[in-house]
Image 1 (spheres, helix red, strand yellow):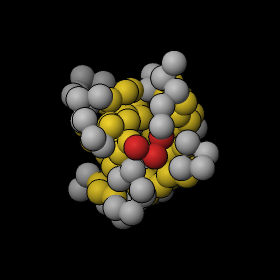
Image 2: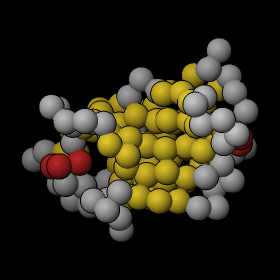
Image 3: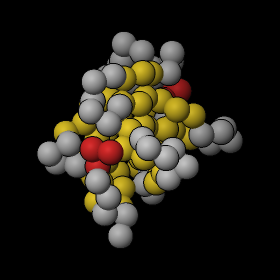
Image 4: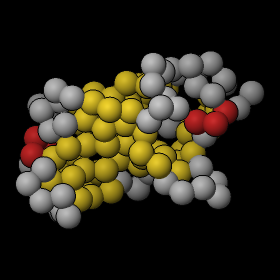
Length: 119
């Protein structure tokens, strides 16, 4: 059974930090590129950050460059999103996504974790 379980969300003040985790199970983690998406109320889901299956390349949305860092630990089947200098516009539900590198139509989503940046 495939599972992606996000954790680490919560309420944080502007300028604060959070670290999200996504624990994967039920598939061969190191065959999947991993990404974090977010969805704010009333907006479409958007890509925040992505990392290759080997962890040797990353990319970021312009809005988070220099503030967020995506990483993965293939031994622990976990992907992380370190979020620093958080802004109110970073508020939303953050989702973990896994895409099979040999067939991108095979992909999985987590259930999401809420991040709220507010004073």
